[in-house]
Length: 352
View (cartoon, rainbow, N blue to C red):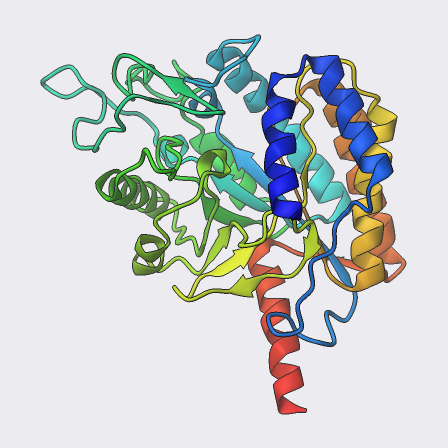
């Protein structure tokens, strides 16, 4: 029943104006038992974790995510350049508080440069998505790679980010690097197995030049699919979950062998009209619920979120999580570390 209500709410939410989104979201949170806890003794370790956990995942995309996004007030390059400016600041705060996070990075950002093929197409070796329209994107004409400048990191910094990736890898905090596909193509029903395979392989090839072999995949647009192919490519973990209303929970391993990790809530807020202090308090409640139940809250965000949301919501949330960790209430874990902790709790019970 919760799954049906969630789907209905999300459909209605999409058509509301910005202020309506804020009011409806606050109302639902106040009148329900959110954040919802999903715990199944058959799927999860009965004794849960030693203490609660909080996981941060960061969808690092620059301009790639926003090329065909619907209902945007800014162009993709403007958003990408804001993200480029804010990533170092976010890394600094993570280092200040000692927060390890999972950075889900679009594969094209690992490139120093690229050029057009003889036919004039960007990345002619890649299989293309056909035109489609859904709640997130509207790709109705042209080529999937039509925005790619086929330049380099110096001349087109919204499309390449080897310098920022190097900052993540050399940070004094041990971050996890996950794949977010090569060109930010979702894996929904519009994505063929041929396109998905090309996206995964190109991403793995680009990451290999930095010595990175990811075990975690975060679906672009949170549009999931092709699990068997991900397992064949030796991924072990995905940000997707079989129970769509689960907000406080633990990973579960499914039949294809992948560990599925829930996502609790995004930091980013769409449009204006939000009470940022109320949003911070809501996110803190997710942390508290995870601590109370000795389960996990998984909070994700885009580094391109508006500066006021970064300053008034994200950074205070970082500080609160660090404080709760110092009090012994939670651990702060990457997605891979969260899976490892869940497996360890399960093995411990089996030994007993």
